[in-house]
Length: 218
Image 1: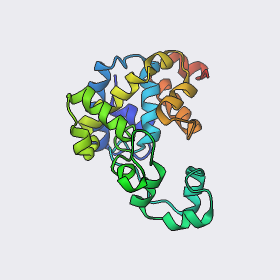
Image 2: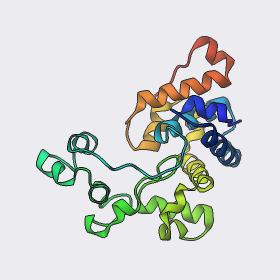
Image 3: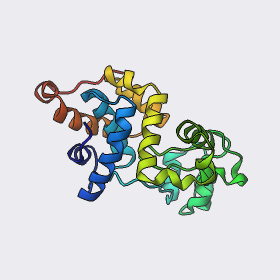
Image 4: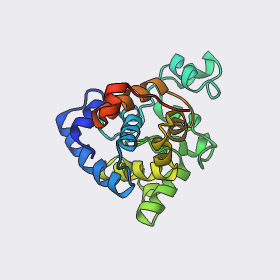
């Protein structure tokens, strides 16, 4: 059900090559995860399209300005002085922003940057890398080599695993996009963009949605 055309609809500036490669691996992962109805596929791709707009699996871009740091992580960069000390330093930013959470050690441990977001759904945090690795491979390979999560096949499997673990199929059946966004993002960052991408895909898959519009629940 996942085709290159759907990825173009869900993404931004998706190339034909990236759409073809990603559709192959995401399609295989979606079958295993029962992402197999218009609503499930649309909600899945809407989230992926926001997290990875070009559907080119990659790592989180942490090359932020001071103002951007204060906007994205106000708790970790509460004033201009601290933000400017970290601005445009991705390693330092990752280590501070993700320290002491999601199973990461403190800022000095380097876990924040090492286990920064990767893949189609931006897998983040030591505990999530460990859980994904154990579930998909039965070992700790993603802890030992986190960049494996960037490889398209692994990224697709990780995305489907995280979706399933978060019970997102049931949420998608109800078009509960707010709940899906919280499950994927931990908050509501980019909700409007996620909703727009989801609606575009759903209208391609569901004639009723195309005719009557798409309405999301909480």
